Image (cartoon, rainbow, N blue to C red; front, side, top):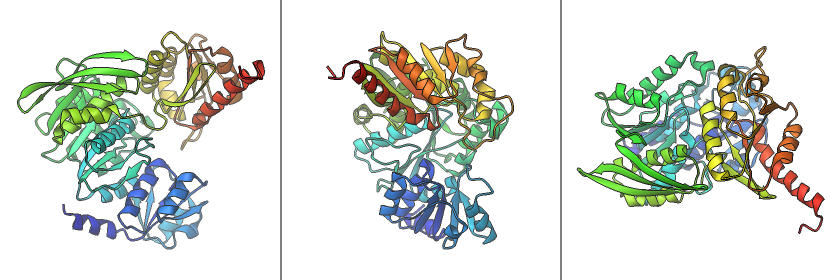
Length: 476
């Protein structure tokens, strides 16, 4: 589709108002629309540096949500998190304004470009960020929309002139079905978001439908090491081109071996290119086997786009991480503190395995905040098993996000089955003090969860600093 058609598609939206503009996904779409000349406004319940940045770019920003905020809009953008009682949404309906989901707004900005959609139960943000960093390093100028900040990019979204759009495709509410990719990446498929889907079978079915949205000449890239995504690949062969990646012997882009040292790794990749077998060394500075797989997914995208393998590997070597994905918060007393967004048992397990690699002979301590009552109810035993990988685990109250409490569902469903290693702390201060008392030089502490537990990382570093000062006022 031509850029002229793309511009027309955006122009048809008129003046666009975002409810919840300060969210990572909403702000990403707004940033791209502003870059493409759309008149953007938005509101959020609280002020933030992100809102002020969008205001500097040209958006009209309101702190606090009021019916008056939508009076100059033609189109109102919402996410699944916006409740029907929101005064701006209610007013938009009363005025019969066009109301679209965030994913539909993002799809409008993609028109006319070759879309790379990165989906999967885990790893979407990191893989999307890796792909974007890699393409930029290789000399491309991609557009991108990522569900988290990336330090090496400086922003979570931008509009580029390279004709390629890299987008994180969110499966949580089925909204990724609004995209029509040329390349679809699926990192894994597991049961999650059962508050929306109901059953694991329904989750697998929506990924099958996602594949049907792929351009008929497009490429599906899936992880061969994951049962869910490899089954998806098997079901898709014949209807779409498929390439696999991973440690599995039959992967099209195979990780032959990996050496690890702390946060770094070096892997050897084996793949076919131009009819012959090739090898490529891939060095990474972010820890964990899951991140090696994420990087190889991005590398496989590069092969499809015709980028030289050595340039792709060089770009990935420069990737330093995404916000809240094993993000370093600071060090004191020889204790390193990291923050991790993991909120599914598989993600928690991967984060703790990575922490083990980083800690070496040191211990690993975790402060975990469950996310959603429904997820805690469904996966309490699996969370318990994952947390058992830590030397100590302090579990906070459930972060409700969009949900109302469910009777009988508390964090004690998790701590009651770990055999005493994990302890429930209704007061975050108690969790901080408990972890600080246990930590020794060489240890690693992780704050884990998709809620406000992220604020505790910096506080932990301050507590560790104060404990040093109290023992030795000279600091020596």
